[in-house]
Length: 115
Image (cartoon, rainbow, N blue to C red; front, side, top):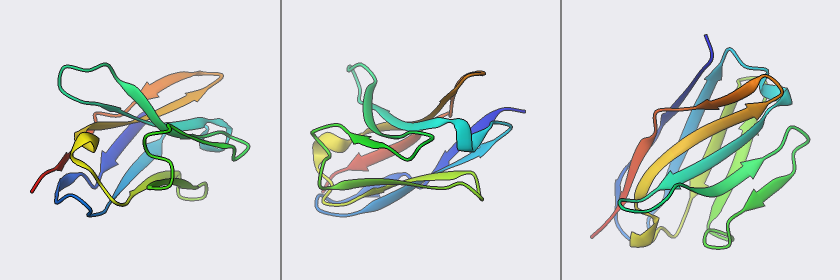
């Protein structure tokens, strides 16, 4: 069964940190581009960070220097370390996998940055 399961979201104060995790199963993880997206209320889903099968990393300008994407191929896990969080980072964060067999989304995890 192809599945992505996110975890690690929650409520954090501005300036705080969270680490999101995405566990993949049923996919060719090492051959996939793994991406974190987010969607805030009333806004379109946007790319946050991605890591290609070859390890190339890309960040949205709004998170550069604050967020770090990484992966553990053996464990089929992808992570998003989020530091210096801002209220505008509040959103549902989704994990996505793309490879030559298709496109898979997780169910999302809520991140709320508020004092």
